[in-house]
Length: 441
Image 1 (cartoon, rainbow, N blue to C red):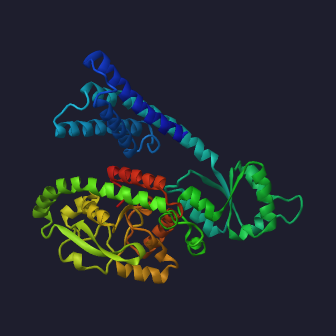
Image 2 (image 1 turned 120 degrees about the vertical axis):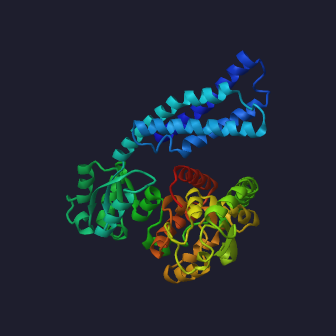
Image 3 (image 1 turned 90 degrees about the horizontal axis):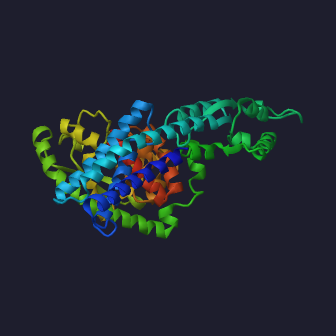
């Protein structure tokens, strides 16, 4: 239902903008719309409306009617303001106000309706994915905690069983099947011990034939949580292809996207520089830029470039994990970190090939040496070019400890396992949503 709501929202934006543009051309402006420059700008406005809707969480991240209305208002206002600023900068009426503001107003109730539809679908999805898990107590607790945060697919553990309880010792005893029927479950999850028990596998096979989905614990983490569990990292780290290593076409297309992004990124860098200079004079005195050594693809080191956010003496304290409320961060530095403006100079690293738009975030060399000595196959993350943003960033957020680094590695292995242009686009979209919503780091 959420996919249908999302499709309807985007189709609605296209239909309203193109419909109003066609009407304006025929009845008000008296010109041929499809052969005019306004046709291309109408398509750009449609993209802006869709991006704005996605960024504020429409149609599937709103909670309640008030949130739906406020999100719809915000999406329309942001898109209309963005196209108006472009017209002001260009000094030309690229789209009639009738189209810009008419579409923004019409799409508010449409976006609300799509969000309501997605909300109903979300409730049904939560009811549908009812899970019976044959796992240890620790694994069951971990699953419940993970599903209570931000899963990729909604589910609830309705029963968790240990192997002795799920095992069938008598021909007529089928405790796993009985639990699935009793709880109306639609998914069965088996850990490694359960997979080695023939009676449990036999019951799972019968359930599978009846239409119940059966997953190993590792596959459940992959599909429902978007990560690889920590205890599986070493075991499966060599058992999948990596896009940049094993699919040459993907690597070339990804680099072309990076170059295009880097060229476009110079515009905000030039625009922001005077603003940052003034802010530094007021509340962040010292040099404008800050560079630090990081580990890149194949273990090669490079200097990452940022706007400085710490006091000059704080920048030299490289042996400490940086926390979100680090006392070394200046007042203006806090603002740049919250808005992610400090990351903008990294477009230079992207053009140089040090960074990609999407990939694992690069760490400092001494952290890499430390973590590689403690976490098996940690260096696998360096087989690809690091990124401005990544799956671990949008799923987990800020990492300030070794424990956080281990958690993020589980998401990074998921990214390596599924690396593709579609996943990259999904990560970029979620990053935009995170930045607009003020979440993440």
